Length: 325
Image 1 (tube, rainbow, N blue to C red):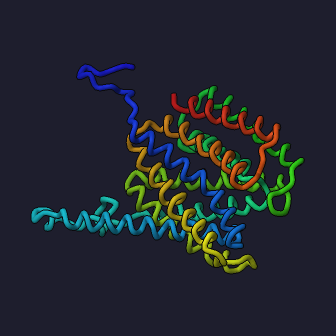
Image 2 (cartoon, rainbow, N blue to C red):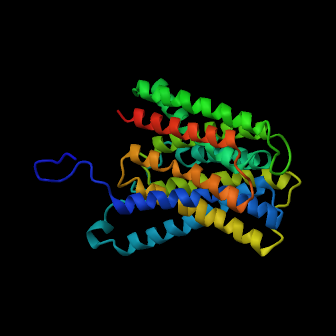
């Protein structure tokens, strides 16, 4: 471990931030579990659960933003009172250039959750979560093509290995029964489509995150996503409101714990961790989801599925390590 002349470590690892990262990953790992339980216990459709996720998440984050605004208003001094009003994102309230910051991530967020939740009908939560996490590769390739960021041979090798693992997962789906109905391979394709939506969401968030707070961006992304998903949820024939207390608790857990809590913990942890460490640490999420799906939802893991999932995770790990030159 190298240190500066003052003795301060350049590579010190913040244990609280690392714990926050793992806690956030576990919270998000429960998202598919809460979604399927809401459907099983409360007979809520998967697209309806997607709406409740972002709506309840937006409500939770809105309360957090309100608390932050009250705290900041109370801490204003007489000297600051004469300065321009500052919003919760740290920018003067009169400066609102680039209005896409509040609606564009929300559009991608809506596509992400609509496609991902619908994949739970066709394929296992393990496959769906593993394949959706290939967004890491898509984000890096975009940054290489558009933003001219450099990539290494190690990243290319890891990405190809993850691709091989994804093929193995889809082959395993061809020989398994769907969790509810439909075609497991089609569910895997939906999960890969989720990766493109999630990568687009990450890229738009990264662009606007340079000038706005993570909490504010996540609130507006969730609110816009809820506005888009509401008519879709009401349009199709599945049940919109849960018929049981267990179903409502699953929806509340989905919105407050998985969405707001998980995303919030991860956003906070990124302030004290290197991006490469954070991205590798988040690979805990698909592993946890696979284990939770097997133990809680009764979705057993078969041999080829385990092997393909392991190859995907190893490939993503190598790709992430190769991305951080």
